[in-house]
Length: 113
Length: 111
Image 1 (cartoon, rainbow over the protein chains, first blue to last red):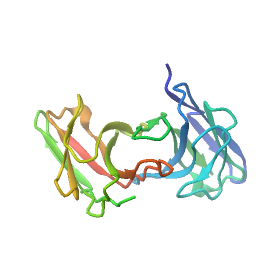
Image 2 (spheres, helix red, strand yellow; image 1 turned 120 degrees about the vertical axis):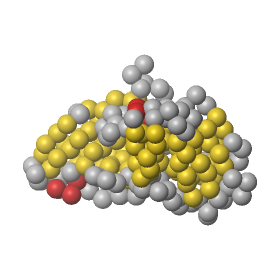
Image 3 (cartoon, one colour; image 1 turned 90 degrees about the vertical axis):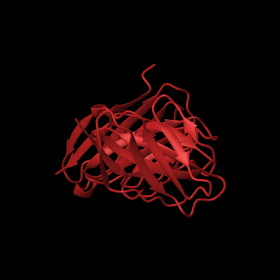
Image 4 (cartoon, rainbow over the protein chains, first blue to last red; image 1 turned 90 degrees about the horizontal axis):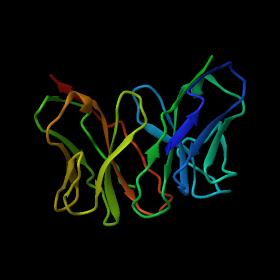
């Protein structure tokens, strides 16, 4: 049982390049989330999904797209990376509804030059 | 979801109890209080949650005031490994299940 895994762990992009971050969970959780964390700040929600085939915007969605084609995977895409998107990205999953807690992955450190 | 206010930093001597306060004066009746911590840039880790009653698990105790406007997370015997940023979050169950993390309290356990 690996829990929540994120790929890649580190990445350096040039401005304008695109990339996709992969989040995978093996706990059969319905809900999945993408957060970003900038230095000295708390986590901010980018997008989330309450089930396969569904996505919704969070607090800071601009510049990102997401897809949830399979229940176990949640992809975060950057179509045209900007230096302002330099951050650490965390994925989380949670059992649907109720008072469930979120389980977090180890994070992806992204630098956009 | 209700906003929370936490002190930006605290120190605690190793072996002593660490008491981390959180103010959530606008909390509504159906909002739970959650605590997470983040150790040195790792993914946040769930600690404990509660609605009205005090709660205890193997990691910590959560004391919620009777009016529910504030709470305290207690780490009974702090160790150096408890040095982390602690986040207090209140959220309504079943409303998109979004968690809003503030800047938390940076706890330093001193040898």
